Image (cartoon, rainbow, N blue to C red; front, side, top):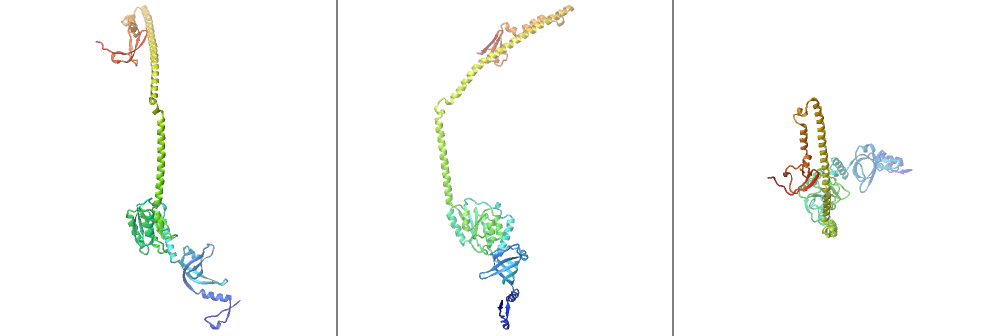
Length: 454
């Protein structure tokens, strides 16, 4: 194929015919000699790690330019390129002759405008996150029904009216303290810091930090590092409502709660009065139901008591005790005579055994003495000579001192209830139970009276 090409600078050669390849080579040499810097917005990004280059399109309102940047140079930038970013590139045009495609060979690239700002904000967010300012554990909980609410915003913007209207509708009981401050420009961040510190000193229980929508550049005061540190240091929870979705500022990240708009921030700060009314009505209904059930059960208990034997049988309470007393008295009546009879029998047997033992001792003593006396008589001596006393007479005297010998002569022995021998009238009193032992048995008696021997 032959292409007729007109040399603009050489009219003599304007009718010379060139091949397509020659024409493309001519254009390639002309383009590759042009080195420029271009600003535009990234689109159609193709960043495949397996490719030797990164491909994207740089565009503005009217035109689009295909671009490439070799992988080795792109990786050194440390930039996460995304579609929609505004960038500045420097390089030269290049022409791929085989396909007749022109592209821009990027030698250097840097973020520009909003893209640069977003990169700076992302870097600050990473730093503050590493310091723990965005941890959920350190964020303060919101009061359920705040009596006073601090509002930090521009007094002339739309946001202040949205917040006040929302609070008046939802929770008119709250008192709003307005801290008016500029929210845009270079001095806005310092003003916001002063306003937050003033709100910290007030009686407010929660702080609203809000502003209306705007460009990313307009919202930059809320991405200030000192402002973020101030929010994190407050002892009162901060609710942010900055701009509109999907923008998220540094202030949003460190606040106790992030709301999407100023209106949403006001809704999060206070409950709806209708919700409170419904909750109170539900609580009142539960209390009423509980009291009614309690009263019903109480009435049933009272009716059950009314029907019980306690209130219908006059002797119900004392009858069981009386019966127990009667049974106990009956057992005592049976037990005392039986016990006394048993004790009398034991005493009688013991007395008899004692009498028999003494009799045996006396008999054996006489027998031994007689034997000794007989033995001594053969030897020409008597027991009287040895002991200096007549042993027969002593034995007779010992037998006369035996209690049984005394009793047999008409005397008696008296014992108290514990079995102690009575030696004096001071050991007993009137109505005491005593036992009297005679030669042929025992008498159980009660003391009627005592009298001292004159």
